[in-house]
Length: 250
Image 1: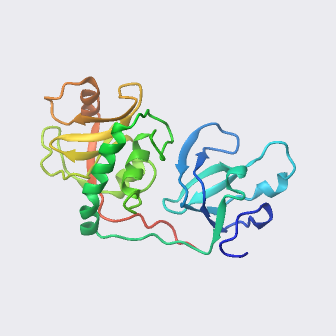
Image 2: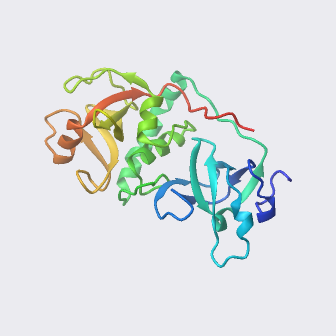
Image 3: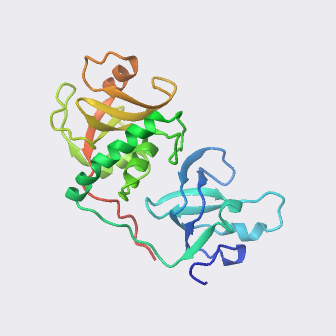
C-alpha cells in the first residue's frame, strides 16, 4: 500500500491506518441510526472490520467498523464517507504534554468554550464536531483544540482524570479547566468543565438541561433549575494531568 494514497475498496486492509480528509459521523452499529461520535478531518483511524469488501455492488453503501486512534473509540462509518476521502498512513502517536504544559493551555480552552457558547447550538447525542455537542463531546473537543486528547465518554473521562476531593459546599480545590462529573453514586453520565468563580460550562439536554451549551453555578446561590439539578447529581471532580496515550499503534 502506498502511503498517502486515497482509500479504495481494494486497498482496505484489516488493521490498516488512515487519516480523514473530511468530517464523518460514527454510528453504534452497521445498521444503527444512533450517532455515537463524530470525527473531524485530520483525525486518524484503523480499520477493524473489512466485511465491506464482500458487499461491493450492493445498491446501498455498507458501513465499516473503525477505531479512532486518538481516543480508541470504536464505531461504524459509512463506507462512502471514507473511500476516496482518507489517506493511507503508516502509524500515529499522540503528542504528549505534562501537567504544567496542559495547565498553560487551559486559558485557550476556556476561551474556545466561551466562543462556542455564543454560537447557535443544541444538544446532540454523539456530537463532537460542533456547533452541536453532547456533554463529553464538548469536553473532548475543547481539549483537542490544544492537541490534548481525552477519552470519548464521560465515565471514561472520569476514570482518566486525577480525582479531586470536593464536597457539596467546598470547591476551593478546583482550578479552571478541571472536570466535574455528575450522575448517580453508581454511574457517571454527565461532565462539565469548571471555569472558575464557582461556575462550570457544559452541554446539557432538553430534560433538566439547557438543550445546548450553557453556564451554571456550583453554589446554592444559583437557584436556576438546571444548576440546582446538576448540583444534586454532582459525583466528583478530576484534573487532566496528561494526554490519553491509547493503545499500541502499528
